Amino acid sequence: MLRSTVVLMALAAPVWAEQPKLGPNAVAITDDHAFLRQAPAPDFWAFAPFVKPQVTPTACTVAALAAAVNGLRGLPASAEEPVLTQQALLEAVGDPEWIAMTAPDGTGVPFDALARFAAASLRAAGLARYEAEAVRLSGPDDLDRLRTILRTNEASADDAVVVAYNQGVVTGDWFGGHVALIGAYDGEADRVLILEVDQEWYIPYWTPVAVLAQAIVTPVADPDSPFPGEVGGLIHLRPQD
Image: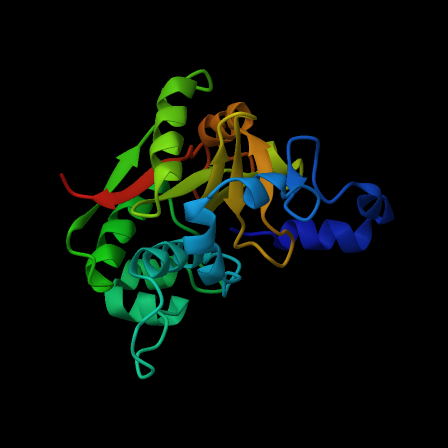
């Protein structure tokens, strides 16, 4: 993701500081963590410890996928084996396009390329029995399909869901493309926890499933985006049948 324009606006316009950190469609995990204290929340406990800040403004895909494959692998048993860092994942995949797209001056990654990089990340992490299924929503009302994926994901830590979405629809801020990892699904409240890698600006937050669906299908509105009109989707990392 690219936020240089937003930073300049924040410095130039004092009124920006009056805007809430999160809009009405997002609630910080520090303000609401009851679900995580009451429910098993297997995904949160498996993946949250591995979520690190994206290392460049365009590296949200790398951060999200590194957290996903680390969570699926678990903490290495040997003291000599490191946790897979974002840089180590990029090097292990070895795709020049991904490296260029996520460099400090990179373009970021469109959804179709994200699906390829997710599959390559599974192979690089030694998760050969897993597949990366790319899922597009047909529209903001395609909620049953989204809820089915979220319920499956919440049942165990044996799979992971990476989501590509228009961040501003959720946060009320920068309306550009972003990628993060799903941390939990509260079915009773019909809301989802985003394990945010854009940690210069945010921490994990809850958002209603209907809002996330809208964010997934809302085209990127950032005029500086190299992928105008890009919409998101889900990458479901799961064991092959």
